[in-house]
Image (cartoon, rainbow, N blue to C red; front, top):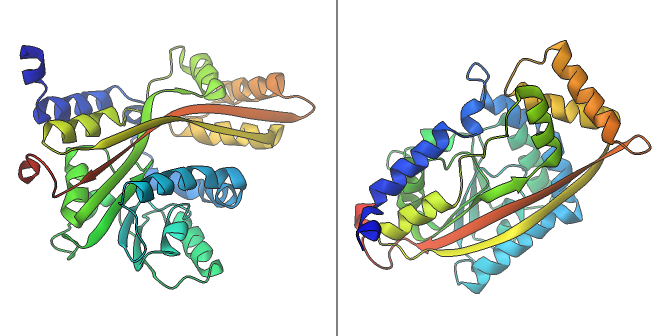
Length: 296
């Protein structure tokens, strides 16, 4: 029983902070503007959103939300880190209105174009980082039936998690990584470049889940394997890896050669295939149901 008593909200808040200190995120180059990375990825996310495999995760997530009663026609939704609109667009087709928060300007342009192409007029935009949002000052407190966040770096600690609860009058949803990811190309190149095992992301669903649980909320949890495979030319794959590792280190001629050699060695007939296996977890909770929510 003593072990259980030690697992307070403060315990999980500290554990979350410690995970970040030793995470992949903590290894990013501080001199770089992180929004530049998401701007550079805008075209990739735009293409992915239009493909069949880019729609599988939204279908799985929204089906679960509907089953749990958290997603209903006529809802008002806040989508944090909306990206290219993978969730914004299908939700907007049933919602009363969607507020889509997306701070990366190139990504926001892709999102706005996709919304226009779908003929939707019930989407409004916030071009701010979630960390900078003040719910009370902006009049967002208790404004949404559902506050939604999927694989966004904006939810990174207790403070940013609490904002979700403050903006909701009913439901909150969060999807994030859940344990180990299988990124063979990235992992092998990380070992070749840095001579160490690739760190975990640091933002794992276990931390917000346990923080909420020990705070008195009753979060539902679902975990599954997300499969993401894609084929690229040698040139495209090399550029993709270089863009990724540039976030962590200067691309010296030696590193560029390492990346180029790796891609060429693993390509077949000029095509490099990326194989991802990612464990994802999603949690859903009501802000006004159960235990000690008033303290969160």
